[in-house]
Amino acid sequence: MLKRLVEWFKNLFQELFGTKQQNTIERHSSPSSPPPPLNDTDLEFLFAELLEGVHQARGQAWAQKWLHNIEHRVPEERWLEWLRKFGDKLLAAPSPNNELASRLVQLGELGVGNISNLAYDIGMQLLTRNQAEPIWEYQGPDAQIEAPQQDLSTKATEQQVEQLQSDAEGEYQTITLEELMDLMQEDVNLRAQIAEQLGIETDDPDVIIQTLVNQYHTAG
Image 1: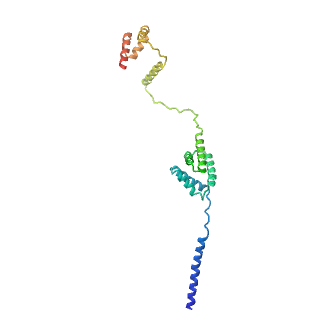
Image 2: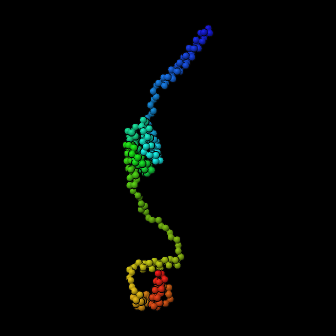
């Protein structure tokens, strides 16, 4: 009876451990299932990672290695197919994206094959389109800006200065002191105006001429 019981336990252990070992061997020997294909959203995420590395100036060698490491999942033909659709979507977007366009151009300038060439073309199209956007100007009336109020004396002074500036913008004529003397002797109003501008109380032509000479030497 005891011998028969021992044999039963031995058979049970062989069935348990033998089956487990056989299943383990079968699992190791069976080929692994291929990973699911990447969709467009996955590619957009991966491409953003590539552009970020390019933007961080990791260089041509890094970009080539990045594309090579993922080639078993995304071959070049798949990249080009997706990138064309991605470029069409960017070009059809109403709002510009200059940052993304610049990164596409940066990738293209690395010269890492057909993918970078296509990225460069798309980036340049985006930048060119953004620069060619029309600039709309407001055609309505200009806003009225109220100037601060000034007292009457200030306004009068400004009007006098503007009048003097307006007179000064007329035609100039060079005359000698002798000619000026003759003009003042013939024109009383001219003497009065010059005397007033010089700040002297007399309109004597000799005094006016001397004052002009003195101011000329003082200014020199």
